Image (tube, rainbow, N blue to C red; front, side):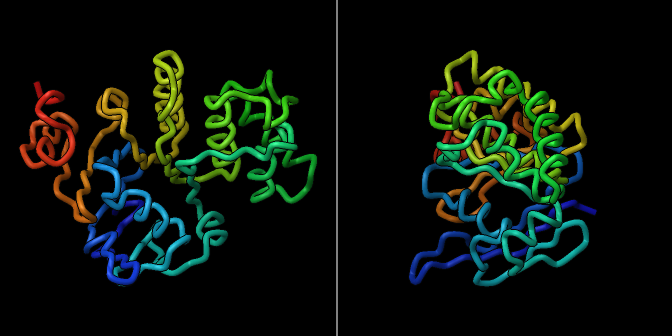
Length: 240
């Protein structure tokens, strides 16, 4: 049985059909990539799964439970964490304090939340910057703060929304290795990404959305040879 199952999920905003009867299964221990052009409905799908949007129709099951319509905080407590496409650190708080915000999800005592946050910062490579203010770190570090805050909730499934956008090649390579390390910790990964050179080598499977519809689902090797995907998103230059 899949860890996350999305069945016939439809999301409308008035007359705009953002997600059209999407079926998706995320299996425990895998890295599943979600790609497609801007406006394809990827982040909308994330928001529906995480509880930020109510679905128009369809259902979402996680670990065997029907979580359709659950509030975001309840979804998080159940074991789903997510990052955001536009990263925002708490500017007046330290890196450590930023991550403790996530720790408080499972550790109500301050000392325990601090201990958990420090462990996460060691894992994500930010421990040496734990006393920096959120306002004073690079965009790459802000992305790591957000990822760390999500990990501090101790998720079973983490949803990453363009964690590699805007990074230089060195930072991107480090981010890829971090995603692999997250999976190696036993956390399942669902990720939206536009940097094809990163998501294709790291993902076990790829789902492609276009105009709110799923147009392909397969291994990266097969997906990048799919004519509909090439026409809609990748382009002949990528295929070549």
